[in-house]
Length: 87
Image (cartoon, rainbow, N blue to C red; front, top):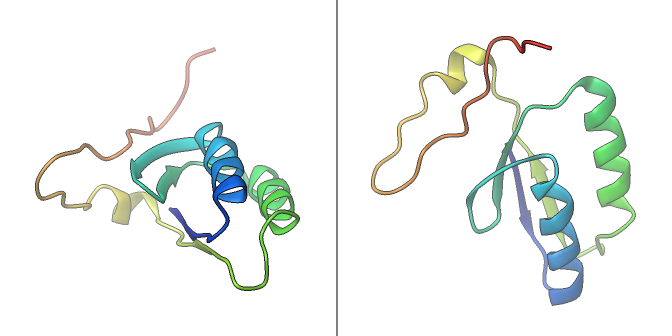
């Protein structure tokens, strides 16, 4: 899970667009993403090049067991990441 708090509108839109390409937006500034270690490294570097010192991007790892125990009250669904992909 990746969250952000960015004051500049232009940078916030850029971060939103980048994260939209990597995961599912579950709240305004919260994304659920399934990333390989290399994807995570590249994404962290890309975002670090955008944000200012007073901005915040937070990364919360969720193991498969924890992700299956997410409870949602009200509207919305948790992003569904399959255990495997057929190619």
